[in-house]
Length: 133
Length: 466
Image (cartoon, rainbow over all chains, first blue to last red; front, top):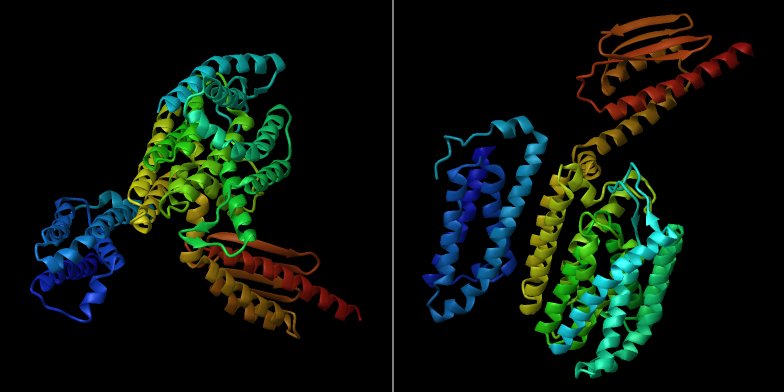
């Protein structure tokens, strides 16, 4: 179960990091733009990308390190200097920050629910040695 | 600004002097809240008409403003018609609260008075005409929404009045937030409406903070809730942006959440909505081991978060409102999970754990089973059918001893249910306590068995008699 969520997290982080790079490379896409210009989609993807480590992974340095790609992506949006991109990407930053907040809260809720369902497993939970970022 | 300072100071000073006087009057007339062993946490009688002091202070402060003739006295005079139109509504709420403090009334009487007061306020001009920029098509919808909002706010402050300093403190947070929002939006009329309330509450808290020497009482809590609801409507309607009720909702988030939980909880339990219980948010926090002082800190902290959110929404012209609402809901959910409301975790288990589905499936199977047993089936055939049906409901053993048919099956381990049919015999079934099938379905099965075979044996008796 842990492995499955890790792969999903990788896909989300890939989307979060690659799409801004495609924009900066002026790779225009009729499919990409409508999705990427939606604040709600930014919000949901960032929320999911943060909720997974917070809610599912064991507590430890891996959980905090998983936030690094998220904040790198937000930093990329903040540093948009191209005039066209500067008109688009920074508008998404509030939605992305709110998504991070929502992801943390949702992840904490998941953690509480998992602990209530299986307190013994939650008590014995240790950072997995299989996880490598 | 001088006027605001004068109003606040005057109401604060009046409240500091009037509250002990009202307390003494309450002692003299015996208008005290008696402790009990169930819900109330105070251990000695406490006077409970603190609302009289608060509103006397507010009225006194306005009177002083009009007498001193500050420039903002003109604003007060300009808005006086609105105040006069709302006064009957306020009088109704305050009156029913005072009657409730002195005598006890039925919850329906109180609700009727609150509804009447809300309708009077709507007639007086306190109207929600739109939500999130969408105007209502007719006056009926506006009336219903306005009455719902004001009645909910009225009862929200009343329900949260269970710990020293809680309702007054929450109301103080709400009024200070509304004052800040009014100043930010240059809505000085609203600022003038709120500032004496804040001053009076601050003075009252001096005596109401734990350990309290006087309580708000229903005259205080109902009227505070009513006023805050009305001012919330004014805030939403007169805002320079399409604020809607989001910001007032955030300001009163804690009491509104408590009233929503109370209604949901009582609906789930099948209790009357107005039945008092000891499962409000403050009761749950106390049961977690928090002292009254720490409880106040926690709830004041939550109120502060709500206040900051509402101010930010006001300043940012309601941008990102939807995201803010999602975050607030997630935060509330997280807090509620720590409070341990069994009702909602049980409902979740029933719905998502498959219990409802399994009970429904069992009920359908049992109806078919009962029909078959009562058909023209011999006891021997009934035994065969029963032996095939028992495992479906988690039973692992059975003794069937009716008339001349005696059969045994399976292992007699776990708990046993024995059904006696006087004059005919008995049926015993065993169920292992580790069985994975639904125990609710097992109980339904036993009940069905009893009913079906009672009917069958009665029919057999009739046939034999004939």
